[in-house]
Image 1: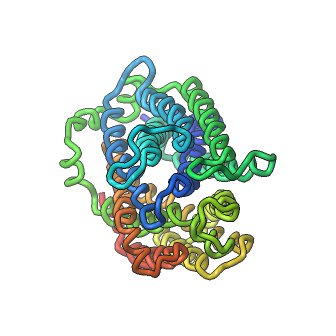
Image 2 (image 1 turned 90 degrees about the vertical axis):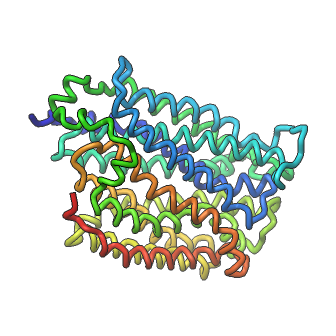
Image 3 (image 1 turned 180 degrees about the horizontal axis):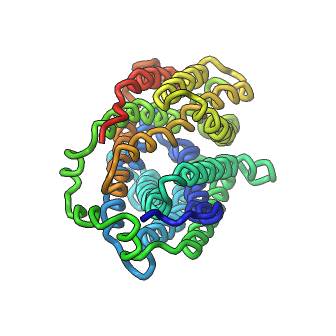
Length: 437
């Protein structure tokens, strides 16, 4: 029996909370390196702080997929995880930017001061909660939307994702523009960043509550009627057994993802420092120039999101998804590499529009390949597939300081490294087996 047709607004309601979650994710992506640099982290240490977010995603999302597949209660199937994650994220978003204002009795442990330890634990809980809140949106579309409407439903979700990114990225420069202080004493995060996190937290919980109350999930009987009971009978399979049974497409797309997400980890880690060096001519984190570069990072990431939204309309024009994927990665490689050579903050718009091309492809094409190759346990497999997103970030974060030293210590050089990774990813695209089930 086919699933009922959903209206545009029903599909919109399914994903509207994603808008708020993505604001939180954008604020984290654009400001974490800036926050930890402000708290005194050495540039060669910055990538280590980025190990926690993907590590928590790799641990959390498969479990959210597995256990939400089995959760049936009055609140729904996926919605309890959605609400719980959002509430924790709300709390941590208020605490994280205040790390520099809190006094600690013990100053140092393993070479990291108390403020940075507090920031690390806050970041760990923030990314965990974001992952818990984010994953159910992908699953609810799979649960509630028929195959003939999934492309439209995921397009709506992608639009809301990038719209949320725009808001989150632009918050700090907006608050600076209206007169909120963008500099602060040494070791303290500027008020413009703090207020951005506060507003992001408020929007996050409001958007999630909207989806929570507007969406009615299927009960077990309805789910069995529209999905069949076969998937229910296989739910006891462990994660390792499911990985063994995963189609070849799952692994080959994961290889491409490795190169893509390693490149973006370097983007998120080094953009503020790189453009501070190339466009503002300073590496002093207490300087007005460095904090201006921090704000400009949000603007550039917003340009990237615009590029991703524009490119989404171009992807269907290609003859095959493979071709679209490979071309997108090559265009993105040019965008990344060009950052090293550009010394004007406005000229960087062109670079980040090209970076947005690969970001738009990464948000849509891999999940199309993988879900088309799956027949059962889609929620759990999507959680496991998140490891192909998280593991490359962990490896890139662990090696970031070593690579930075090897390329001369200039953070802008890491964009050349990222461009090379995307070229390798474009070659790996042609290993994808679209017929594997």
